[in-house]
Image 1: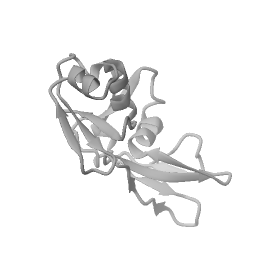
Image 2: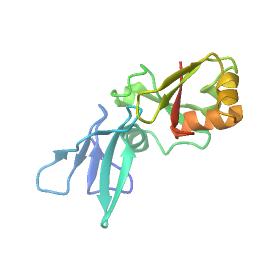
Image 3: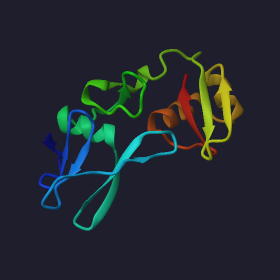
Image 4: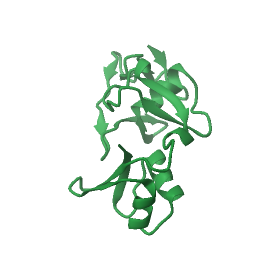
Length: 152
């Protein structure tokens, strides 16, 4: 268990992917929140400011390093609930899509609509945008026109 950078004395992370608060006498395991695409988040506070962080980001920050520019974190076993250090790895952002023809899906923010695409080109055409914009939305886990995007 190690102190989380910038939150020393307040929060610790474990190698198995848990976050603990040390704001009270006894350590307390923090409650996990899920974002709309299933990634685990926790709320950390310092100096009366509350911030939601992805658990996998905190684990990598604490035990490896800050995320290098141009890199993203991948869950090696593709299980978003497994935030253990041994399941996480920095990979080049460019490797998220190794080739233009990879399939992907778009899931509506209400989790009801799912659209499958044979390629990045098809998704970009459907949403009247370019491939780079769709790639960026995947990497940043950001919403575009009410949808999140995932490689298959």
